[in-house]
Image 1: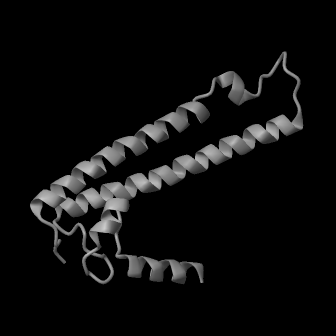
Image 2 (image 1 turned 60 degrees about the vertical axis):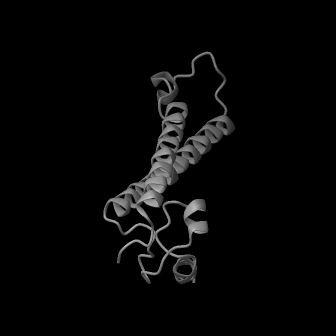
Length: 130
């Protein structure tokens, strides 16, 4: 399974993926700083001087869990970007991992870390949800 893309196209997609990787890493850092790097006082629950209400605690927990979910999703995207960069190095980027047919340039431009062509992706999603 070899790529159908030219060296120039691979170079452009590599650049796009690297930029996207930096953007995702920035999002992870930002969410982590906002959520996970709160002061030890916040984490320990020492709220002396503050009225403690169960709804506030529940809201804080929900926000923390939601943010952790976002970080998890961003990390999955980061892994997919890393895999796409490896496929560029291996000269297999742009070929569907299932049917080995070329992934359209429209799909790669929209989702540069796409592993599969649209048809195979839809089939996989249908199987996973059905």
